[in-house]
Image (cartoon, rainbow, N blue to C red; front, side, top):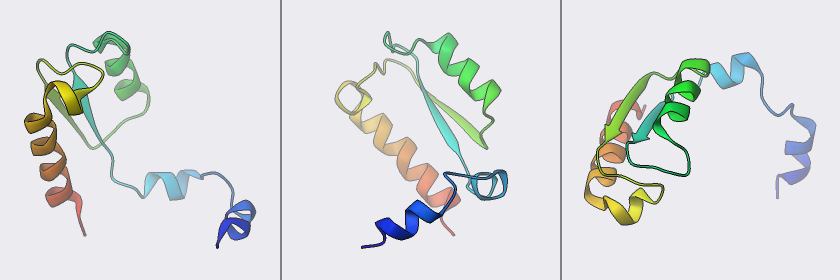
Length: 81
């Protein structure tokens, strides 16, 4: 395995972290990570795109599976290289 190789790498650098395209999906009805805090994270750790799912709670995979799948597919198509 490559676990030993990973130990030699810094956890992340600005150059490596910054090279990854990032998207965030706001779950509008999440009571565990409320929308205001989600917006704070996006503001303080900028992403390339923000999507929203109305009616999605903390377990969007269960509460809004079709909408979540659509967002993830859109992200995959848009940012796949």
